[in-house]
Length: 343
Image 1: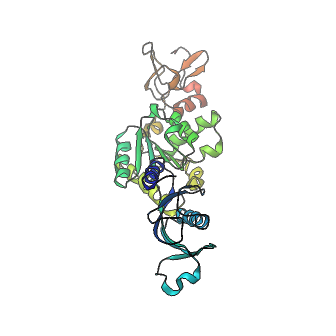
Image 2: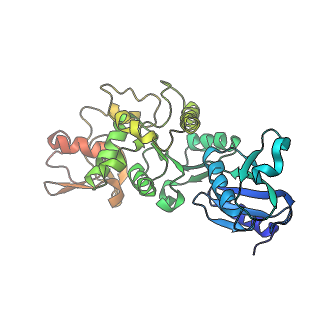
Image 3: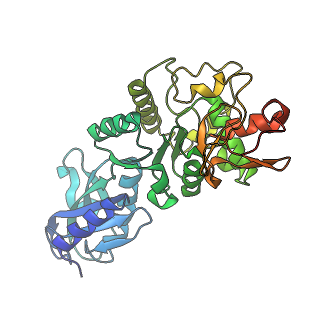
């Protein structure tokens, strides 16, 4: 049987794993009772009890009340016994829980909820990402900042909030990993147009529509044309709003509407505004060394690797900076692929 200190150690471990539970402590007893003053137990949301809080009379009642405490987040002071034992002597604010015990024993048990701090995973190393991490840290949230190339689904859980702020550097791969984690919130920093390109690419790869619909693009409250630091504030404000309203788990319901591209996307507050302002007649693909190529749509020099969204057209392999440019090429290859140009 666990003693009080072992219970506290296990409580710390559950908190580190992000699991909600209740801690029950016996603060008073009237014999005969199998429990002792100061005895502690942990009760999980599914009703599993670790420790000792009393015998067969008290345990079911404590578990039931602990589950209610976890659900509503409000601590309770219980008085367990028969109603006739206490009469009018029950202090205000104490909850009397009758138990069907043959003895005259009684217990006072304090049950407190332990709700782990929110877990925020920020994917990307931009200044905005670090500003968001600092702001979340000031709220006491558990915050992890992970480089896009290092991020995997294992870094987040179903209770996590994930913000992908890779800003054009592997957005598709980061969102795909984040979707697999099925977090409570998943937002992508970028314009409507950029988000449509990323999600369209992932849809073509076979990711289910119901999972992609959960991605909020752009992440954060719509505050208009704002700076990168203000984008971080807007994202945190949205997360706080969703948590306070209790709508975080269902926040994806409005995501699909937000993912619809706007008719005219200025993109002034997002890092990928250049997507909307590519030249009408971009320079053709030019040789740029054995490991580089030029995006035929926007003219950006990119690595000639599988990570640059390669596309074969008329025997020529073209490379792109983003799925947006790749899609524009696919829609009108003749505008961007002179026959004499080869990678």
